[in-house]
Length: 389
Image 1 (tube, rainbow, N blue to C red):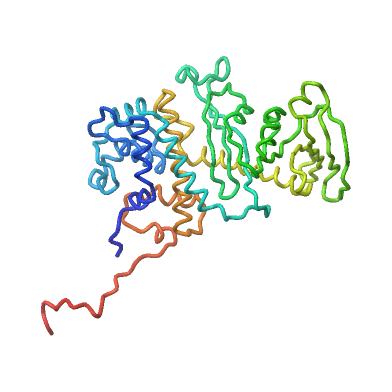
Image 2: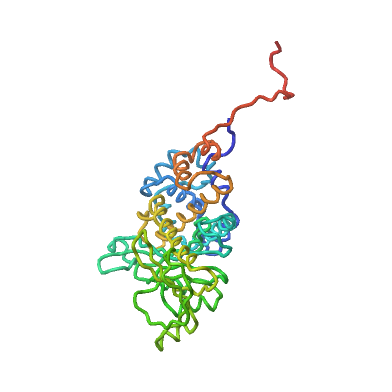
């Protein structure tokens, strides 16, 4: 018989609480707070994410039904819909953004030795953005179109472990390429991007930072070929060229040499042209790197399907960003638990198991592997028998 913590407490045991309190103090999250702490708020919102709650009233009803177990889950304050709504409205979302970054750093260290489809020593990032549609009359701050609101999640995904390294949340009007201004380039890393990020001045800053990029070219841009490498057309590579850009303004933006690779995908019947500043990798490897960019699309699809980031518990910008950052924190936390316990299941399966067992007193490892502890009597116990036979 298992005599340890409930599942929710086992999960939150992996949270670095000292780091969380530092984030709270940094933004004075508990200024004038009496009983409902930032950690109480975080746990309530984490419960909502893990169990797919639909509304604040839903969260309140479910948690009050488990009143006897809330203390063991770590929730000390009284849970009410109005208190949670006020906390989401007023407490700075950057508390949870900074805390998510702490967990991201932990997860990246755990997954840094994992392999992905391509054997490379360099860190490989996929950069992309996804749109979450909102009603403009309810979320007037989420500018996008004349009669439509939206926010964007600009994400830099580490392809080892599919852990988001950096996330930037903006309203829908911000163009994807502006993400490159927020990025701190990592020397030696490879950044894979779609053609929405093709801005030669910004790409040249990556080159000056000793970072590499692979970006899909637009249909028309002027260049001059300097040299063509021999290629094996049976692999789909049509040409592998060293080029420089033409045009007065463009040449000022990127004055250095660049690599241009043309590739024909026989499966999708589509022609691709890639630009890169990496001259050492083979042409087919660069094409495979761009193909691996699809992992960031799968990440967006996963979090939209399995976390609460499309319907929100509040309408203010602070409440929306708080909910999204806590959702990201839960995604990373589940990934950390999966790695620590060496669970051979997908994140989706683990999340489904956690969603129905949060208040069960059972080991997470045993729940996932379908085994149970057995009570084994200790033959060497020194306790005397009450009745001797």
